[in-house]
Length: 386
Ligand code: CAA
Image 1: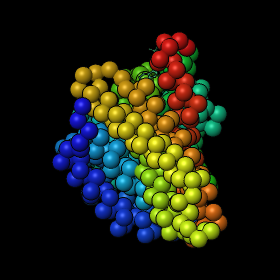
Image 2: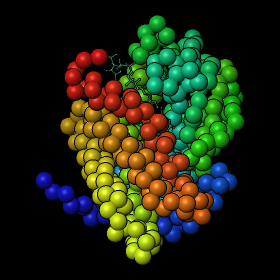
Image 3: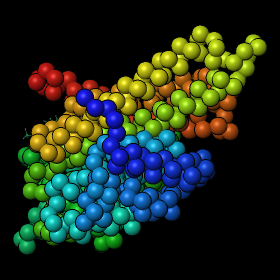
Image 4: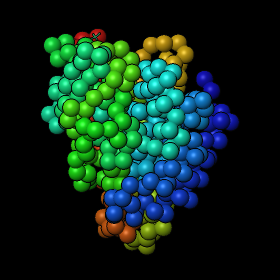
């Protein structure tokens, strides 16, 4: 077993770290306060290849592997979770889905502008009444005589929804067939019948714009179907397996930011005549933080590696992705919580980034499958029972 990173992996890690520390970290608190979408930074990230890391160069991406993607996500998330959310949805939920299931023509048309960062992509599965129970979706796509579809319905919690040019949408084409009646479509948000709702006011990742979207007699042609009709649910689940590695990476980056801030504070802050880091209760927290962080990091890279192997040899990596996401998101929540505690009043103040890390961490336990869904996926796969 060789744990060393390749030259390419070290290179993208260094490019992402440099951009994150120079361009994102100094403005992260301000974007969190205003909730403004960081368009200029996202465009610049696109120019560096960070918005389509695994996308081959012929479709506008950096053509790198899944471990490279995970490493770059960690660096961006360490500076700001909101930037990494936009990056993650663009890379995995949108580009990765189309790369796997779209035709050549669809890839050139719909992946290239998004992977290059020229425009933003989004993914629409969740609805107001269907989150974890994804097959309970009501958004309907009704087939027309010419082979096209007319779409009606709502989707909610759409990351980058307010700014996305294209959206990978999942809608029911044959409701009686439940999971086998879902079809994937590409949506051009500039077309008639596409409406955006209000931007959600959120606890964390405030600069990653999220909104409800609605379809009113929105027409798509047969050329806008992604993959086979009725295969949409499997496409969504496969795409989410990859997406969960992105969220695990995000959680690792965020946890690392909180951990490093805590180490520094524990060395510098004095109480009772000594650095607080010399007290056993603080030392125990630091040791537990370090263990959880290391476990999350390595499980995330293992999941990314499993995805690479699956791309070569076939098969799924659902368990590895769910194990990584569950471990990393719960580590991020615990580590940011402890980091606030070690910082005391300063952890609770907006003068320091700790309270933002704490707020941002929560979403990693919720989106792209809650912790409960990750446990369900792992246990089902392990036991073979349902
Ligand atoms: N890959 C490929 N196919 C898969 C799959 C996977 N990972 N998981 C399931 N399938 C297939 C099954 O094999 C089955 O196929 P057959 O019909 O041929 O047998 C079909 O899909 C249905 O599977 P299940 O019976 O297991 O489906 P279920 O209704 O029991 O649901 C679930 C399974 C795991 C609970 C699933 O609904 C799920 O993951 N829910 C969570 C949804 C989620 O993560 N939402 C997040 C939204 S995205 C987001 O957060 C937005 C953002 O912007 C960041």
